[in-house]
Length: 327
Image (cartoon, rainbow, N blue to C red; front, side):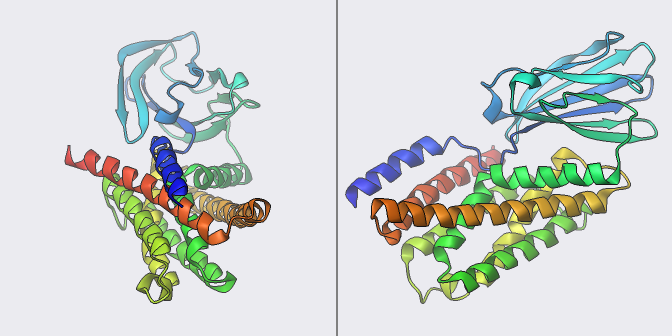
C-alpha cells in the first residue's frame, strides 16, 4: 500500500499541470464595427501553447490597423487586434485557418456583422468559412451537440466528478439516480445562466467546482456507509451539479450563441454533454472491471489509489483557482 501511495503522489504531481476546464478548441470572433473596422479576438487554450501554430488567413484586401495585444486569461492565450478591409466589410469573403490540415484541433469562428451573425466550426476537413453563407437549423444543432460532447470529454474536472460517483454509488440504481440528479441540476443552472437569470463570476465557479471534487473524493476515501454523502448521494450530487452547470454556461458564453437560435443551440449542447457523460461512465466502469480482472488487484485498492491521485489533482486546481481571484 505504501508503494501505491508513492505512485499516487508522483502521478498527482505530474497530472496537476492539466487544466480542469479546457475545451481543446480555439475561438475566433470577428465583429464588424462602425466605420468599417473589424475587431478580432482569437483565443487559444493554454494546453495548446506548444502545439503546431494555426493562423487565420484574411483576404488580401484586409490589413491590420491595431497592433496585437496578447494576454493569458482564464486558461486561454487571448490575442486582440483590428482589421480594415477595402470594402469596409468581410461579407462575401472567405476566412481560412492555415495549419488545420496537419492538426486534429478545431477553431470555432463567430462572425458578428451589422445585420446578421454567423458561426462555423472549422476543422481539418473544413478549414474555411464563407462570410454570408447561412446554415440550416440542423447543421447548427449538430455543431452545438458536437461541442457539448467534446466539452464534457475534455473537461477533466467534470470527468473526475463523474468518476467519483462511480466509486461512491453502492449499486447501479443509486448511480443512475445520482447521474440523473446531476443532469437535472446542471441543466437548470446552465439555462438560468445563459438567459442571465443568475450570474456568478467564473473564477468563483471554477474554485467551487474544484472544491466539490475534493469533497466527493474525501467521501470515497472515508469509506463510511453512515456518512451523509453516501446515505444521500443523489441529493449531494444534485447540489454540486448546480455548480457544474454554471461551468458549462461559462463555456457556452465563451463560444457565443447564434442569435435567434439560442434555445435550440443550448438544447443541442446539453444533449451533447449527456451523450458524453453516458459514454464516459460506461467506459470507466468497463475499464475498471477489466483492469481489476486482468491484474488481480481488488477493486477497492484501485479505487483507493485513484481517489488519492484525483483528490490531489483537485486540490492543486483549487489552490490555482483561489489564487486567480485573490490577486
